[in-house]
Image (tube, rainbow, N blue to C red; front, side, top):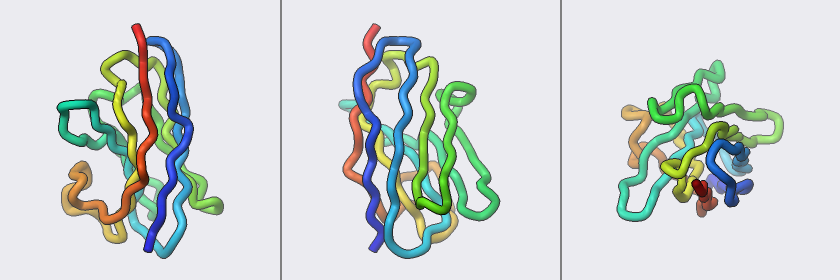
Length: 123
């Protein structure tokens, strides 16, 4: 079974930066995604990267500010977050899908999840 462990969360001021990482272990996967969930809100897709060709996609609300990447040799995925604002405050999760998701931005397409890391952005 795939295991994922996030790290790098913390508290920053608006306009600051933070880098999240997710160590993945277990058998093969086709896609790695970052999701976030704020209190009272549904879990939403932030970014994803495919193991074939390293194709990446971003949600509109982070495009131009966040960058997803991976180190295949170390089975680690990263999320570089710049120009953070209070609306980015949430619990951030990484997830893995064995097959290419039919609905890539949907949490239900990912079978394996980490425990999450909290990101708090103050004004």
